[in-house]
Structure formats: C-alpha cells, structure tokens
Length: 192
Image (cartoon, rainbow, N blue to C red; front, side):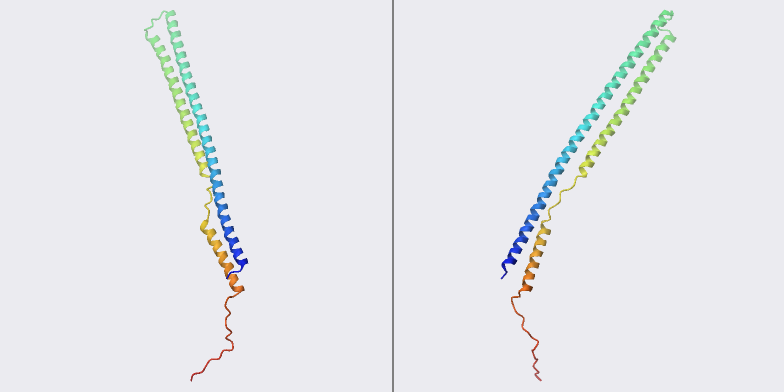
C-alpha cells in the first residue's frame, strides 16, 4: 500500500500536469488572438494604402485629361491665329502654305497628346507596382506572425507519468514490502 505522502506527491504531479496543459492551451489561444488582431491591422493598412494609391491614380488621370484639354485649346488658338494671319496677309485659307501650317499645329497637338498618354501609362504602371508592393508587404507581415504554440498534451502526460513512476519506485526502494532471505550461510548438499 502507498504511503499518504506518496499519494499526495502523485496527486500534486497530476494537478501540476493539468495546470501545465491548461497554461499551454491558454498561451496558444492568446497568441492566436494576438495574431488575428495583427492580421486585421495589416489588412486595414493594406486597404488604406491601396485606397491612397487609387486616389493618386485618379489625380494622375485628371491631370492628364486637363493637360490634353490645354493642348487642344493651344492647338485651336494656334490654328485660329494662323488663319487670321493668313487672311490678313491675303493668302487663301486653302492654300498649301496655310494648310501646311495648320497641319503642323495638328501634328504638334497629336504629339503632345501622345506624350501625355505615354506619361499617364507610365504613371499607371508605377502605381500598379506600388499596389503590388503594398500587397507583398502586407502578405510578408502576415507570414511573419508567430504561430501559436501547440499544446503538448502527450509530452506533459508522459512527463507526469514518468515522475509518478519515479516516485513509486522511490517508495518501493525506501520501504520494500518483501524481505529477501539471507542466503549467505546456505550450504549445498552433496548428493554423491
């Protein structure tokens, strides 16, 4: 039969193992909750940053549209000035020189608008790269979150079992139940 102190030690071992498992489980839950809060913050940051870049893209488009309108107005003014000047000089509006001058203004307008479109396309590509960078940064932050520790139920149970077995063996060695016979004075019988 086990002594009361050994039983108490074994009960404390079981209670300690149970508390350890509960603590491990609570730590895992706490880490998972912290990860979720951080993930939500990362996603909010991603959405905000993308919204900012999209606003910049809208501004880029509006600026390009304004620049194209300005180029169109400047070309129209130059064509009108050329027509008036040619009329004052006594040239016919359908003359080759007047048409060539007006054609030059139209070509310049086309070049200006093409340049504006090219610049807008480059800005859009740059903004798209910024958005890709925002996604990569948020994904990287999410990937760096510390994984919640998995509670080691088996390890805790085995450690507790090993400790209890050690306590039981210690009890048996300290107070053996059965006395071993003393065989030092035993003589063998010669049957010869």
